[in-house]
Image (cartoon, rainbow, N blue to C red):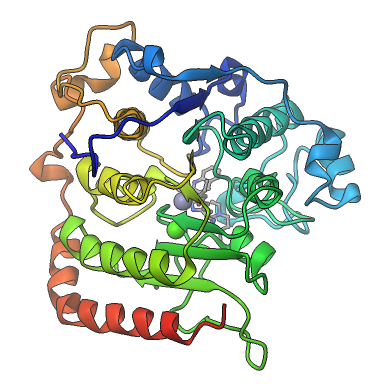
Length: 388
Ligand code: TV7
Ligand code: CA
Ligand code: ZN
């Protein structure tokens, strides 16, 4: 089990809306909103709901979304995203094979209002000081831009939540452990010295969205921007990740000294994810949450990616327990959804079979191990140059 940084309890509130599960990106799509329901069912089976205040909130309104998004884009989204064939990407861009990252589907607008409403309610609970930690596993849609959908994300609930937090807190830190670069959130606050964005992500070989190189820090003459990117190589596991995460985030907390922290907990950085090629264990992933929790600042925990859905459910259930500060047993309690965990012997902390392991990835890490320390030094040096 994961140590929680300290034994102090926190007041935790939790948003879950069963309506999210009815969102359906299409039968071949990799994004499966039902994984949030699977996580919720685990949270419930482990008896964690009794340790949190449940946030019951109305969906966001169009005017809530208009705090970031363009009116024209919202009208398109609300109208059922017009052309179901083209989806709601920038110019209806389509990927190879006729698949669409951002399809239009029935209930899309309602889905957006619900996940954004959850993140807003969670942010307001922190701003109103009724909770120390607020959770919305259906949020964390970090790629959405003001006027376009991108990478499975239609509405950027994170930007909306951070803006809500800025009404109360002077400086807000954003930390993104999703395997993809948090480009939408970064772009929204680049140039703002009140929001620092930090993303750890797989980078290279045209991995989506290809941005988030190490060198992007400051913007030329006016370096009053607070952007930190940590590009990672395929195959990085707990050891490599935490050789970077703790030293970098420790320094970030020192130099930026945020009054609130927003963490996007994308579970696609876990070993065995369908899209990502990092190799974090459940404990390695949760260690990021415990570390940030230990600084004892108002903390917003959001979901994000995660494409091997039983891994995602285990991950977010475990991190809900970390937020509460409660150890939970590895054996998954019997509940109506056990069959999803059968391949892991009904254990929360899964181990992949030898057949699942990618030997090429392991070799890749060995090649890059000496450069991890150099990467850390470069990020720390960039941090010291920031004009905050
Ligand atoms: C936060 N990777 C989102 C991550 C968004 C990643 C991409 C897919 C994908 C889409 C599908 C699909 C897929 C097996 C994987 C350049 C393209 C290439 C679509 C095939 N299967 C988050 C977005 C990324 C859609 N997009 O950070 C329908 O993979 O790489 C791309 C762009 C164009 C579109 N094509 C892929 O985790 C929530 N998409 C199957 C069906
Ligand atoms: Ca990331
Ligand atoms: Zn992702």
